[in-house]
Image (cartoon, rainbow, N blue to C red; front, top):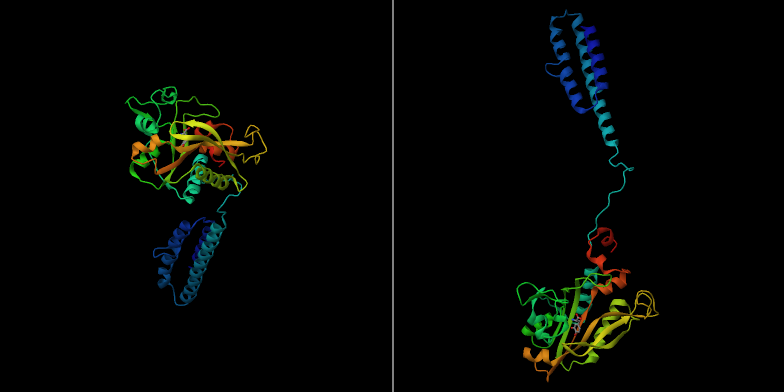
Length: 336
Ligand code: DAH
């Protein structure tokens, strides 16, 4: 009996030391200490021993049982400590890129412009990308033979008179159909032209239209608003200048330019040495636009402007080719 106990203790200790996970250890516990385990089976034979042998064997059997249990416990502790110490991170692996979502650079500029004009009292209006000849041309005082109406410039849809709007100016008409002065709106959105893509043109682009109609609105107000706008966008040193131009729906009309923010007006590559960059077009809303909408041009006057966010984004971010904005190359877009 005593010999058998030695054997069992030795075997149990050896196998517990070799066990490599908690499942193996549980199996060993059952095999040795369980109800049908090896030690338990052996103890059943205690009754058949003589009165001298029995107490010693009983005491020894208890010692073996405790010893096996302790060996099991310490091996469990050892294994779980080892599992915890296992490194959770492999510091030698290359880092995983975190993809932070961000807005498209052109949309960043549009959002900023909208915020600036909202601070100046404008609400935001929108119009459809598919327009009719009426809204895109007729209601904007564009004569039937105006070159902009040519298929060379405008993308017409098969269903006449539908077309892809060539500017955001039709939103002026849609706004004034519904609202009465005072009207102050800003209308950002996509426009389309039948242009061949090159570094400065793309068949899809954006405009931000502004419209301000009230009693007594003058060209001086237009200049003041656009100067405020340029200062908010490019900094307090920024200036604007106006060059005479022609648009069918404004009279007088002007091209707006702002101090080049890249060289603060000194002249650089960005502004082709002129010190000025083009922001867009503007002018006083032509009475021929207001009158058909039931707005009396003798009482009300207004100004309007259209600003190109792509050009601003190019200047701001030093992008020399407009096509980059529309290629959806993530290596380009991730930089903004
Ligand atoms: N729609 C003009 C263009 O695409 C820009 C423009 C000029 C908008 C004068 C206006 C404006 O509202 O008054 O060239």
